[in-house]
Structure formats: structure tokens, C-alpha cells
Length: 232
Image (cartoon, rainbow, N blue to C red; front, side, top):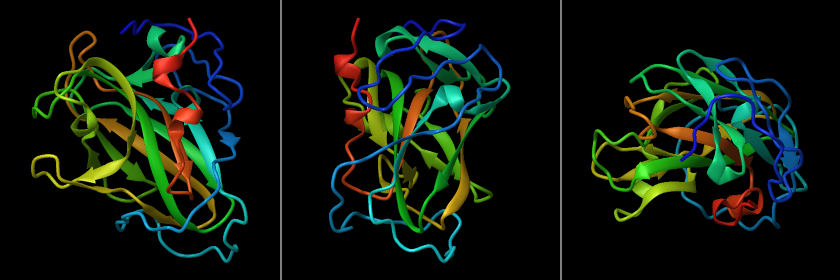
């Protein structure tokens, strides 16, 4: 998968603005990038309790509030470190080979109250749902308890070395049963924390490159970076 250490060059991320860069195994820096998502529709998606509830008193967003959070802009806790993905045009990605250790924290600010939907750009070396397959993270918002995001459940069994956008959900620990992680967040500053779950070897490791945060459940994250159409 080309997870090389070091800095990542700039790359066109299909309309999301300037691309991220990072130094190896250190804290990333920089702000979140904001983009406009497609027209919002009625919120008929499945929801689940999560996030820091309450209202800031801000009115609902007149325009969809969608942001792309790049791993390179996040804060790392060892042994989570930065690498570089050739398949994604050389952008920085975050990974840890140590089970239960290493975190990536992505900070963002919401302009208005309301449910928030999440998608992550993640790597799965071997498709399938084996318990010891490195294809999941613990996910927490602000000071809330962690959920298990078993993103490997979205990978076809016969695929290998796959980068894909996967909706972030909470695994129910029965097969691939899960519930979309829809966060009821007030306007203001928030933090998403991803903690490594399984141990990894070489390129068989859970890796995350970006997260899309949106009030619009119909948002298509492929508009920001399509792994199948990355320029050489």
C-alpha cells in the first residue's frame, strides 16, 4: 500500500481545498478544511444516541455544514504515527501497529446545532470480518465513551489492499451488526478521537486518511477524494 514515512506532498483532493502534509510520528497541525456538500434532504437516515447532547442556542444551518478533516491535521499520541499512501496520491495517513495503543484526534467546529453524520477514508488489506483482521478503530467524541467502528464489515470478502469511504458506525459485537454513529452535537468546538484496536504487521494495519463531518446525511464523501480516481 506504500505506507512510507516522512512528509506527504501536496495533492489534488477533488475539490476539498489544499491537501494535507505532516511530519512523521509527530503532532499534525493546521485547521480543518470546509467544503459545501450537496443539497440537504429530509433527515430520514438511521440515528443512534451519541456525542455531547444539548443545544448551544444556535439556529439550524441554512446551508449544509460539511467539513473534511485530514489525518495530517490531527494530533497524535504514540505509537500512532504518520505514513504516506501512494494510492491516495501521497497524502499523509495515520496508523499504529500496537494493539489498543495510539490515538489520532481531529478537532472541528460546528456552525449550528443538530445531528452530525460521519464518514472515514480507511484502508483494509484483507476484506472480511475475521476478529483478528486489522480493520477497526475505537471512536469517541469529546469526553464520551468509545464505540467500536468495525469498518472491515464494509469491505467485500474477495478484496485486498482497499481504500474506501465507510460510514462511521457503532459495532454491536454480533457479526457485522452495527448502528450508524449519528452524533447529537451543539454548535461549537468538538473533538473526534480514533484509537487503534488490533495489532498490525507490515501493511496489515488499520489506517485512516480523512473524515467527513456533515449535518447532511446524503453527503457523498467521494467528491472530496475518490480512491479509484487519484491522479498518478
